[in-house]
Length: 447
Image (cartoon, rainbow, N blue to C red; front, top):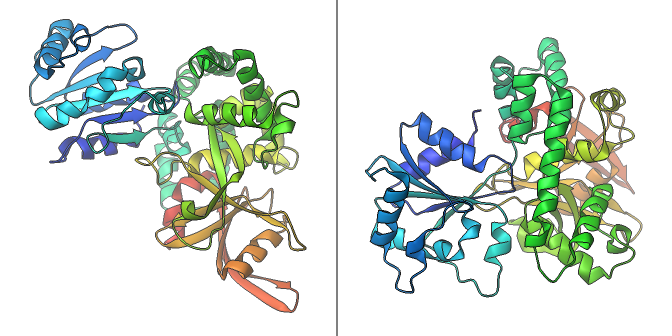
């Protein structure tokens, strides 16, 4: 299945100052498959070492020698390295010494292309005993498949072309909403998408999703040996009920202390299972410069997995869409969050911001704040056109902004809207963007 990330790998491979590349992401987002697809499409020879299955003896000596490592790789794969070779270390988190030794490929053998992939990497890298070769490797962060990639996988290439062309004619809208409903159920985990395409069975898709969730639970013992697995699992499932809300730790687990719940949530974020959305003052760029880490909310990595955990079937999702997500608006926010998190952060990691004022007379909350070039833009995810935009006007008044985005199931439009706050009339340009066009948000704003 085609991934947009293949273009990034192509750019990396052809760079003159190429460094070893580390692909990070949650389990089952398709890291290994991405590397294999890229090598196949570019006719590159891949020498794959899965470090969960293969132990490299040359790493066991104190006196590391890169040529000994290269010889062992060629012996184990029964292939010789050439200029069209990519060495691929899969599950590299299993070998901290190799992670630290990647610098030697850059310093001594830069002509050799090296890609590593692993899950729970952020947890390994934050180990107090771990020293990382800063400036000698590159990172790429992979999330679930986007709605664009889902359309490619389901042979809806022409529909995707129409969306890219910002064609919002009735036929396009009708089919796009139908595919959006499918995406809400299937989500963007590659194995679930592949099952949906090849077997056309929603039952089998749900089985795959449940297996992925069980894989995440099975990883919990690797997070932190000092934290009971049962506590991590309890927070994991409780957090689903708090998605899109300001975190109040006691609501997640009344039987645990706040600092313990905070630590578990941090571990789930490091594992890329949860996506943090942090409050930013949003007065200037970068947004991260005005973050208040004590105010945040979280989302899950994939909407399909959320619906699996909530046991929502296709009929329930269809009903939610017909009701404009009036009862489960969090699902719409989840869809938007997982796309915005990776929209412009492939080398820096997933990132989400929002704005909250929960004190004073003019309380308000903006679902998401994004930065496009030097422009700060507020985004509201609304059930329908009838949904009020009071917080959006409060934000634009305070920050002296005149542009906002509403994402819903409504038709695309760009119009001037007004609202009176006290004696002041606030006017802004409102972009109403359909959910299925979320991947075109940057293009739309540049219109």
